[in-house]
Image 1 (cartoon, rainbow, N blue to C red):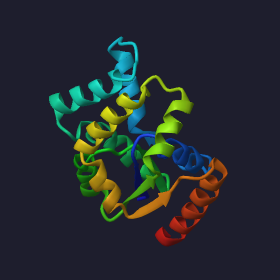
Image 2 (cartoon, one colour):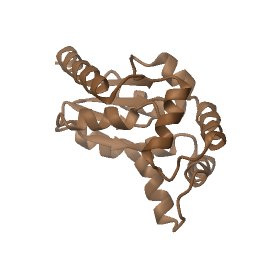
Image 3 (cartoon, rainbow, N blue to C red):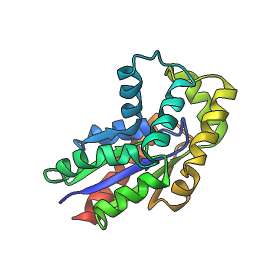
Image 4 (cartoon, rainbow, N blue to C red):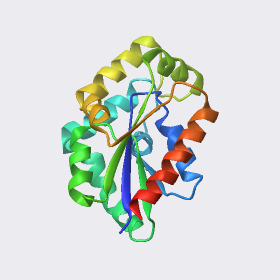
Length: 186
């Protein structure tokens, strides 16, 4: 069985860019954020800065804090049968961590992508996603995700990569991390 790695980080930290870099190395990636975007679409709602967070909160309220992890776990388990590493992008809550850890331990790790708030806010303004809004919406989103236990996940991650520089630096650091990680799990 392969090894699952879940990526966490505050909005705009670079989780998606990290996932893209890892995917470019042939590692399957599943995005928890994509699950929310698909849910918004399936509900026929037009996306906006508050909509995605409201839908995520609604799912958690109706089905439990671990709803996304539970929905994703079987797919990842299947991928782990034929891939040495599967990356889960966008773990945001301790309940999600608990599902993943209990499901795949000891073949589960977490990695935090970190960057200071100003760098992250600037990135959210530049990337053009419908879930990103102004400074107030950014702060609301941060508070909501912190309430799910995101700070705890970041603090307790098995690995941490600081991403306050260029995309080129992130590519270099992520590729180096992946090579070292592969060596340690084989």
